[in-house]
Image (cartoon, rainbow over all chains, first blue to last red; front, side, top):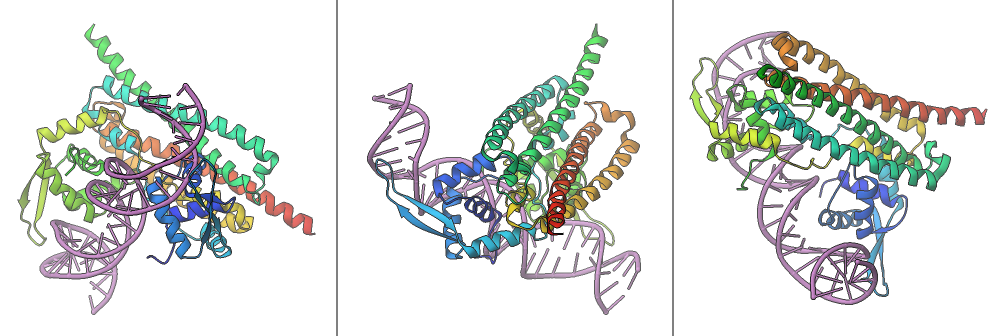
Length: 196
Length: 196
DNA sequence: TAAGTCATGTAAAAAGTTACATGATTCT
DNA sequence: AGAATCATGTAACTTTTTACATGACTTA
């Protein structure tokens, strides 16, 4: 076992620092609250919780439920909270980026611009759907935390600041899509005109 | 072996579609040309080239050199070029994003704003260094391709479009950092003032 | 002489995805 | 009756990182 938690471990601790959650809850919360910058499947979450528990960063107690399967509710420990806070301010290097859209864009010169156009438009649609969901999240956050969102010592701030980042990035990505569409259709337009 | 190439496989094909390269060259080109949206170490590249070769998407010939180790120069095949072009326009889902800065931001409410501030400033510095390097790349691209950069059927377009995306994203990330710094220092400012 | 570049690989481990596995309840 | 939700896990596989391994030549 490595000396430090993985990024996923810290993601889970970040959620547990706000409220105790079961593995199932963590899976939902991760995708709902951190989904636009970190994700994991439940098959990765359950083993990770075991590691956190062995390290003493979380504890759990079994909760029996009526009409539902029993669950294990995890809570962050003092040591876990300290490890998390240390990690937040520790120097680090960003993980290697993986933007498949750009990988495809790099080789778009090989295909007819009209086909490339379809790919870019599909991407734009995905982005706009995402932006729509951000709006709902912002409304929900504002209702839950109010003016506390701008207060960096309140838990609401984390969700707000990361959401803001997501919105800014997605908007800019849509702008890039628009530029791509213009450039690509300009070309097909010229091609069509020259054939007339 | 899976039926399709991995993303890395297509990244390498994308480079080889422009010119034949050795494994070593591919490693350099990958980080120089695609470094801000896809990376790989040489330990991943060499095995991947073997897979591409077994699939018939690339061929190689040994080139003996004087005063330097021999090298294997890889070229894309017709089948490889077709597979690449198909992949460029195929529907897909973006790989899961991994933005560690946001993971840390989510838990920043746990630490004193002054410490969080340091982290954000360090991030901003990294981003501005990146932006500086983009400038050099743009100059180099413009010299090499001229007005062909805006022509979607010329190879220069791929590099130009992806670079543009990178510049737009990084600028927006810097703007987010500035907002964070404002919000975090506002808070420390208030704290300091209230203690006076 | 030490560090850096050119050049190619393998091994081990960590991180992440997909598939397998089970079972009760609730909603359509 | 079938699909969705709640709930927890394991197994197999792919992808990525880190470390190991070698060796000639060039530059400071």
